[in-house]
Length: 396
Ligand code: MG
Image 1 (cartoon, rainbow, N blue to C red):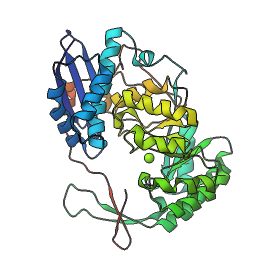
Image 2: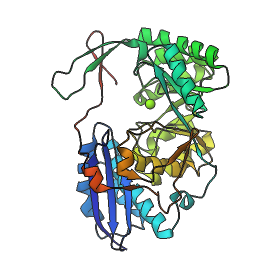
Image 3: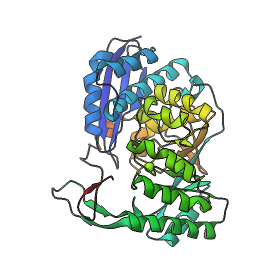
Image 4: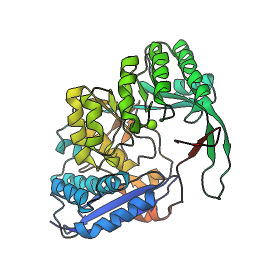
């Protein structure tokens, strides 16, 4: 069997996605993949186009070999752009293998270890009462784990915004840590009082804090028994994780911007985290994500795959396939896609009472209608910008 063509499309059915189709010389046999990287979609698409000639004529059944070919071809290996491009190809190759075998991908990976993939979704509001209402709505829909935020990332620390300098670029959020740090424990005190002790609650710091501020926060949140605290630090501050560990028993999650097993391994072996937020889409696909979760297992680190709507439905199907199988599954993030996504992509994993279920069709069971996708052309978009009140640059 040979790869005969790789088609890539950047489409915007409500938000931008990068989808690929890898075609073979077997009539009707192709694989669907995804390389979406929010704010950098056209760059990943160009990387895939650049890599394509290296793949033509090769055997799509040799997934492990092709993974290493794409990973090593550039010498400048790794990083989010190339690993998303590699993921798009790798996910499509697993889809081909499933279709060839007549089996869903989760069967190829070892078969079901659970009935469905438990998900959390996002409760938010302008204040704790609105956030409580939003959480109650999700609990009524069947969610057992709820992420709770007031306002955008940085919450009460957001003091306003500067307008864009150039039209079509983002405004700049103004952020200060102290009001944020004071508001988060107050939010969870309210939620625990109103929602009771049992519902699983969590919060995403989104890297907004300095290490010692994060230490204060994990200590302050300990009485509220979070399911986990997400991204209390930038991953660049890895050596500060022992401080968080020593400070409290609040479970910790990180990893949505990590791209390789080498990023993840020190977090596991040092037992600095409880949940790893990688997903196949940004680590080079199912081949690498599976290895990372195998590395995590003996260190009791469970999956908490990043999975809001910026992780498109093809990548989501790959995440679900893997998490149906692994023994160290924790939870999967989920939000609903914009409505036009359901026109462009068929076979999207079924959400029911807070659980995602894989499509039972051979491969990943999802397909992208390239003509429909072309009706929603790419819309230039950037990630948000943030500065401190004194004008210095801050992380999003
Ligand atoms: Mg996050």
